[in-house]
Amino acid sequence: MSACAVILARAGSKGLPGKNTACVGGRPCIAWTIDAALSSGRVSRVVVSSDDPRVLEIGSAMGGEGVERPEKLASDDATIDSAARHAIEKIGWVQGPVVVLYANVPVRPEGLIDRALERLDSAFDSVQSYAPVGKHHPWWTARVDDAGGVQPWEGQVLNTGVYRRQDLPPAHIPDGGVLVVTLDALFGRIEGVRPGPHAFLGARCGGVLTGEGEVVDIDSRVDQLVADAILRERLGGAEHHPTRAWRRTG
Image 1 (cartoon, rainbow, N blue to C red):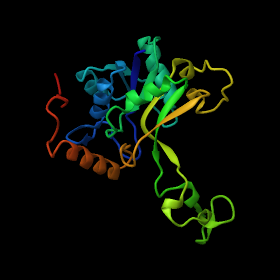
Image 2 (image 1 turned 60 degrees about the horizontal axis):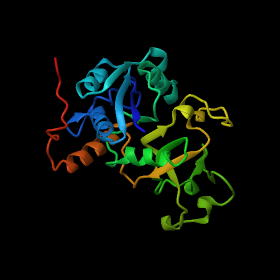
Image 3 (image 1 turned 120 degrees about the vertical axis):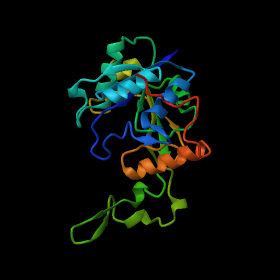
């Protein structure tokens, strides 16, 4: 079954203003996510949802469908699922799963979208990509008070008694590379799901794993520099791939 990719690109950003159109690897940041969606063998429609006219211009130039997002869905407290539902309703998509992609993630492994969609076929309501937490493991989380005193985040033993990284149990965190959901999950049509901000993920949540650093989610200038370096290395130092470069039109 074919899928619809919805690329979310809100104009406002407190951490890094204009990050969705910032230059990364010689191209606007969002261009890399549009490429990933267009390259998927399972995605038949690519929609760009934004309140930023420049984002919508880039999306249209690259072959995507633009959906202008209303102000109430582009605020700091607007939810991912509400923006995705708005885009799906606007284009009238009714025939397959939805791939939610973030415009500020220019680095993701090739084929990640299709891997997630294949896993969704295994009776999951949603599938996200997860990366290993590395040295930022929950067992090493602590509370530091105003006087500088340190206490375990949970329990009574600092660092849970583990001091070598290799002795930590595997732990993963959503990395923003991809999120796929069924229409029933996105629109709250699955029984037995507890209300809450993640109810749109449904009752049966799945995951696909990525390697450490394989996905870069840009929220700061440091993230932008890292992503830029990775992409330029992939392209062998070239400014951009000639067949994938975004060209301004008009």
